Image (cartoon, rainbow, N blue to C red; front, top):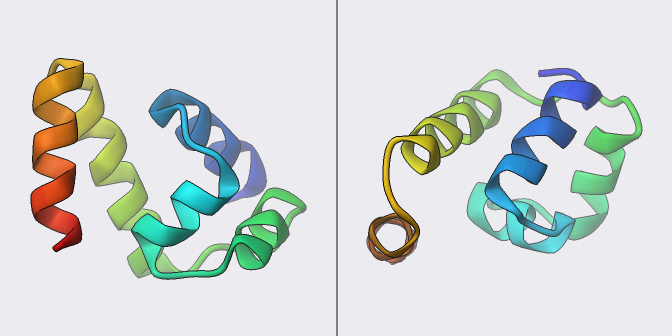
Length: 72
């Protein structure tokens, strides 16, 4: 996932870099590095894409419920 794709995903999810980092198990600093052009590892990119698809296919409340379950 390149920096443009990462930024688009983050904006779709309406997340800060810190929120994205928490969901992916990375630091906020690492997320800024991805935004600046560092390539995101395949596993994390797939997870972020899946979260975007989940967000686009569900309403706000349902997405938040599912996200809480995933983050346990």
